[in-house]
Image (cartoon, rainbow, N blue to C red; front, side, top):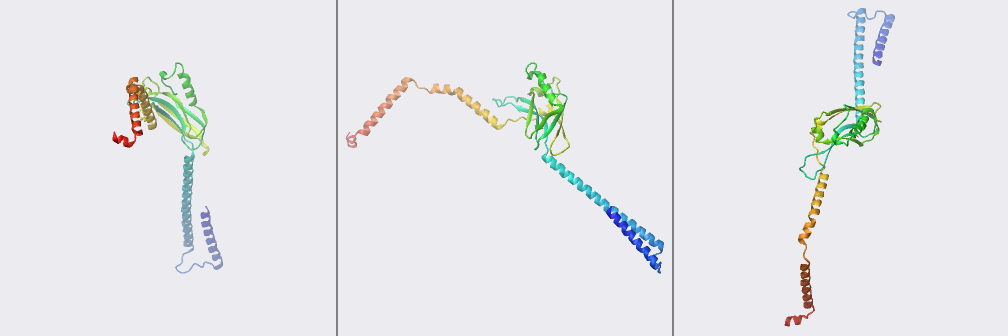
Length: 288
């Protein structure tokens, strides 16, 4: 806008000077082969249009530059928020049992896990699930499954479940055992949709996440055993085997009382003979 006003001011000043020159000197431009008054008017009008067009182009360039700068600043702000924001994650978390036999079938438990994998606390965490969580009765004591899942679905009912969820904290709920839950075809839901909404200190707007918990996907995920846990279990098994054969080995290698007494007499005679040899003078041993 400042450029437009400047151009208009220049045009007005030039036109005013031209008009003043006409008053003072008359039609001074009426020289042979010089433009007429109409031509001069057309020239000034065209000049004004060109100046306005140039000013509009400059304004457009400045406006685009400002928009690009605003977008860049907003992108930088979003990057900074993403770097320090909380990040709530909801997932199915299987845990494998470490069997004594390395070739035993894979078995374990399946939990619903809620954790904050971000770098700042999450506040007022609200969780919603559809359909409600459920499982098989055989994994619970009689009459306990209803109360268990009433508590879980209450936490995923859309109200605030956690006032503050600190980074690295994980909360789990038991869902069932695998592979029994993976292979079940009794009609329990095999896919849940969970929506999470929570706030943080880095943004005034709430964060929203959506998670899909699918048993058919989880059953294809490999469940490796922690190498240290596996080594510890192998050492425990070896120790148990050694304890089991310890008594057998000791009985096989034990000597009878008569053998011990005979070995003792033989050792005693050897020690006495050695003592006599040490006490006899060397010149006497040679004569003998």
